[in-house]
Length: 534
Image (cartoon, rainbow, N blue to C red; front, side):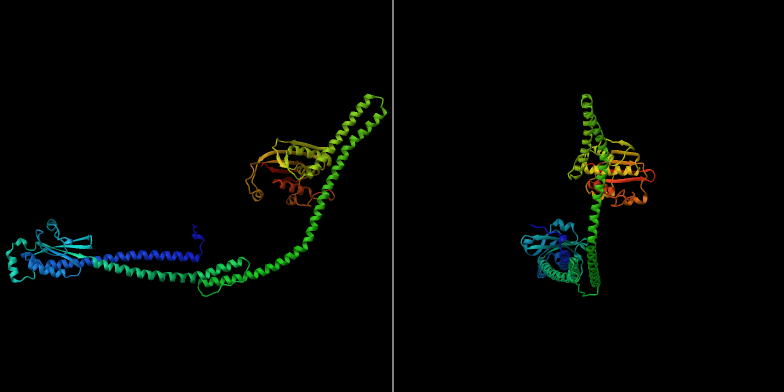
């Protein structure tokens, strides 16, 4: 069975359910109160009537009880039995003996003697007969008063002892049926239920009317709002009243008109922007092509510098090979000289092969896109060798503080490109003379705005870092915001393209790392590269 979520119902349905439920509960509660109140009123009425009949009966039978004359008592009993709801009546003497009785014997004939003696006030008892329903039993003492007696009766009264005057001389008992009251109660219940049904019907109709009057315009506003959210600004809410809801509908229509006007203007601006973007697309494409060409030029320039350095490095072994080859030819008969020269030729050749192998490895690794586990200390050492081919390190003092590092995931060739660029930049900043410091280590990860924005996963516990420092001229504070921008350079014309540090930034961020700069004019610069430990 599917359970309906009340929060998912429409507001009209909610209002009807709440109103009708409240109406039903209020009517039921009111019915219970009115029925109970009616029962109490009818019951008190029956009690008052019964007591009144009992008092009149006791007053009338006073003389008959006094002289214990059944004929006199019989006349009064017949008179009270003519009352419609009196079921039986009894008269007792002061000792509890029945002097006369009339009515249904199944309802009993009277109270006990002990009760009559001990109780000198009226007694009301409610009891139920097995086959005739509920009854009220009323027992009232009969007292001597002497009022409304004839002369003969007064003489008889005077003959009694003075102690018996104004004393109880007996009691009367009448039993009143509640069948009439029950009928009146049933009629009252039917009347209240009929009135309640009419009230519920009227309340439900009034609820539907109020819901339609109050919530109808709100539902129209909701439908219109939904259509507007889908891009249709045509719907207009009809204003049928001048109350708060009518004012809301007027304000809504005004808002829709303004939104429609803004939408038209936005479309016009969008068309203009699209035209402008289309016109500038070619310019952007040309700029992209130019940037790619400049990057390629940077790479070619780097290769040219490396080639120049490699040629310089290879030239010395080649000169040695040529010299030793000539010596071999001249001393061909001297086996010791030939053997020594041949060994040196072999050493020179192996040195050239190593240089070529390093250059080939650098080129090959840079072209491979796959990642592998790399050791940054090894990368620093290889990068320093490659940079030594591109720059003159004769007057450069190298300080290395390399800490044992765990392996990280990356491309060895691209990692070398990062640090070759940083090392050559440091050498250029010192103009070929100064102290180059290379330091590696591990530090706890520090939260940064960029990491909070880009890395939504849990931050790593630590990062490995590499610092490349020089004691050169430093970077001007005004140039720091643009230091990693493409085509930005502080070098003289012809000595830089402004793409080296941009390449460093792109490669570092590719591996979720960060590159930072700390510089002071005239003191030096430190580039710090951090990579997260996974």
